Image (tube, protein in one colour):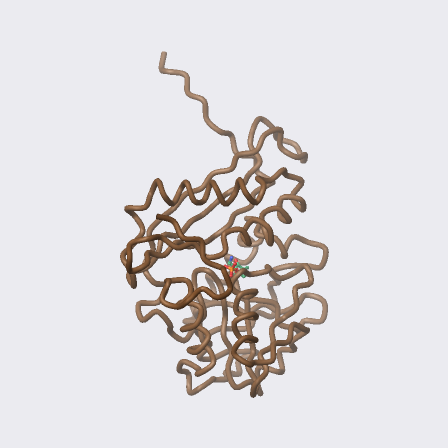
Length: 298
Ligand code: PMP
């Protein structure tokens, strides 16, 4: 008879994950960007919504730091990418019914990743989805649960097959207000004002979103968190997306009901470029961390 092995049995209902990055600075130290926000803005709220206990903010940050330090040889050299950190909190143990799991498993895995785009920043091309919705009011769209991504995978796969980079979702009640892209938040620039959909339970509160609001305000932009109608896309100077993976991606074009609108001739907008440089300067340790957002590991 073979050896008896004990395995963690994942339960099928409760699953939350996080995503953050570690960058290597020129002096060899490793930088984390606001890791406590992944716990406070998201994991603890998500766990509450999913009827799970969650690690405290301190436990979360300590676990991230320890995992990165144990894998520090995998953090790419400056300018060559980052170490992607994926914490996962899931129900586990012997349960088949619709009930909170008897046990919970928290684990963190990491992988070196190159820059999302070879050039660092590159325009993306979006299609507005009119049939599939990412989230419903009262649902789980505001937390980073695995089911949210399962529901949009098909729309994203079809959009990619048609040559789009990703999908921009609308609200499911009025079908006219912007929500977000499959894995990033969206911003619309008009003159000196930058608008982004307000967080109302159906949009993931992105840490990059929150940071870009502060960076843009510190650069003199007026930032509005509000309902942003899809029609405003027609008149916008620039549109960009924010997220840990994409950092800031300028939107080159958006297609809505077969009509395509281009921004900055399909290239990289000045505002997107300016905010990208400011944010990556902080994340990669090239600029002074006046906001106190960086956790440095040696
Ligand atoms: N929206 C969704 C649906 C996402 O998956 C992500 C990525 N976590 C974001 C927005 C951006 O969040 P963040 O800036 O924290 O990566």
